[in-house]
Amino acid sequence: MSDKPLIDTVDRLIIKATQGGLPLVPRPYHDLAKRLGLDADDVMARVRRMLDSGIIRRIGAVPNHYRLGFSANGMSVWDVRDADIQRAGKDIGALDFVSHCYHRPRHLPDWPYNLFAMIHGRSRAEVEEKAKVVELLLGDSLGAHEILYSTRILKKTGLRLVA
Image 1 (cartoon, rainbow, N blue to C red):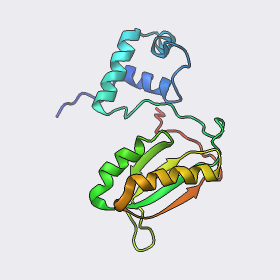
Image 2: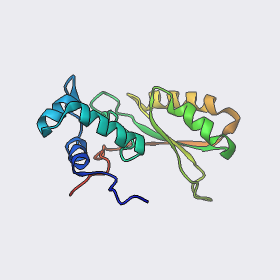
Image 3: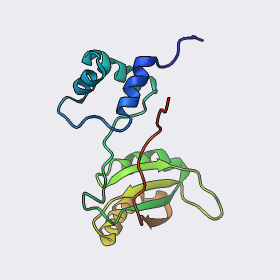
Image 4: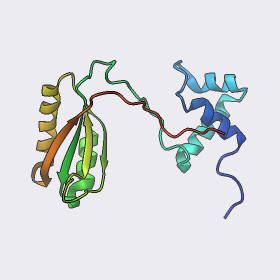
């Protein structure tokens, strides 16, 4: 086992500078490097290394669906046959109206659902129509399902470094 830390001071600087989002410019890593007094190629190589090693899990857009007109967001919960859960998750997660899809443990007898998928729509009727597409995809793998509608938007942030 190495005594070398997983991240060094420069990695930590990059993480802290980007954890609130990348600059909204055509070349965000170059802009970031300039602000931090670093070389852009080094910043990009460090971010790639941290992604490849799992220090950073992903880089992605976090849209505010309400501001985009999608105000009937529904967390659909599905009781999917365990043997089919991996395939089902991949298929449902690939749908353009699903922003995230994940496997969670059931809590029987009260909660039989093991697959969650956030469906976005401009109305509840639209979300329910999209849920029918998911139902068809699941076919015989499906037990019960429900749609739990959002009532307000919560702060959407990931883990933050503080020191």
